[in-house]
Image (cartoon, rainbow, N blue to C red; front, top):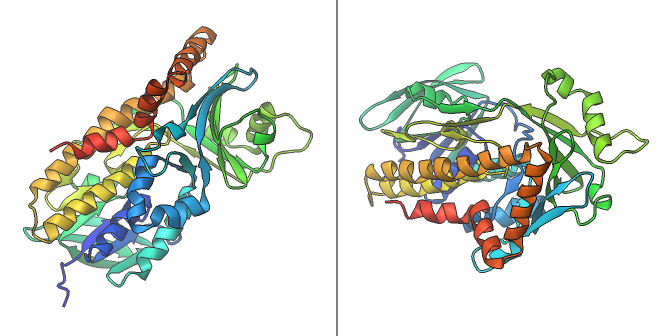
Length: 401
């Protein structure tokens, strides 16, 4: 008979929390997932899946079950100009032999969350509550106690461990009294989606393309039957102005002018941060994903690093739960995953952020020349893609004791 505390409580039903729940339940550990939203959020933030993450997720069939099924395989990505032919393309096929997935896949976060929510709900040892907001956290010698407002009713849950995967404004992190140091970028990130076939207009357009324009920059990411465009709001624009039909229409018309208006299928705007908390583990409470670290979305590293947190943490909880290790493993979890966040994700995403926002034409030429030098040398290209595909960081983290 399961004791009152014999479970792991997971606060947050996004990609990170759901991966943790799915992994733990497969290891025979009861889980209770709490998601603040009543329904699955139509979140536009993330769509990129890197080789290292897909390799991890295939252990339980998640890569083939949803990412490859609902996404677009992207064998290359590129930097290019909107109004000039010059471009540089990185071919991920050079990673064959290092990964089972030598490509990126663009699968929107909502598909992943829907799939895993359904899979978790099927598990006999899993409970999922939507409309559940954590309000108070207490730690005891042998368990954690959480007060929850579940659909208007106050309830108390107890568990051996608790995972805070509740995002940038994490209630769990705040309850632990932890800081969240770093910076907020002076520009927000916008996403707008349309079904115009941009690949029929631009020669050799990769499924992930980062563009420079005389005025600024944008990106195009291809998901099935539509394109996502990352947009930097113009200086002085209010969020309402930036998100307006007129502004988004002008953005797409500047990419490919046409007489018809563009169908705007979805849009969103997000503040952009680079932050990390001091530790990812305090007693029986563990943090993962955006609750522990934030980064610029340039390069699609955030969701991937959070999902990698979740698998790493689930493996360690399994070891401790079944008496094969002690709480020192959670200190190692912090060392491993904080190193990835600060030494890899922050550095790479910050460099991407500033590179794409470079406006000096001569400096842009220098960047393109540097990138071409990399792609023209197979050894350099492989080394660069091992890093940007998160294979190097995953291996480095696993080597940290």
